[in-house]
Image (spheres, one colour):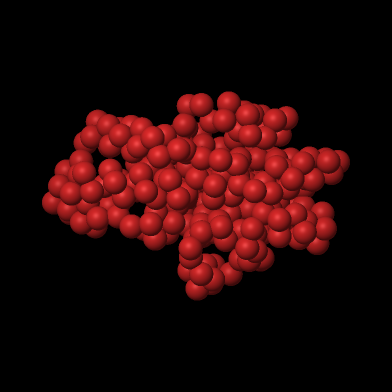
Length: 222
């Protein structure tokens, strides 16, 4: 029986990735970099700092990028994301969270590479009564983000649960890679344009098309 549920944010709780992808594409182009929607989905789960540095490393390997430049780049991208409309809750996400919260002795965690200072307010508006700051692993708590296992390992260690009692809900290949490296049961909810072949290497325990399917799947593990 699963007692700890570790939720990724973008693409799982919020239908935010289309605007994230477009914002990255626009701002990357301003800086002379090529970045597609598929690039965004494949790197989703990384910290924004890693996305920026990885892209420069691949396309401008001789370019030295300062921390100040990275921060300004991230700020510019965040402003574009807001201009494009930001994010709305993922259909079905609140129903999944409510169903889990109704089960005695369960824990709901957020595990994200985001560094949004207004994150808790955003979550409380979309999913009132579900999340608490003490059960959130963000880029502030774990700067070495996915695909490294540290974010999920930190959530597991803080939960006090056995690994077999924990379940990760992810949408991204790098998030799945991180969860697998942490040796945790993982559900992929494939809300983006990628196919199973993008995830197959890390063998998700379940591969589902949307959050409604996650809700239907819950009785198998709780």
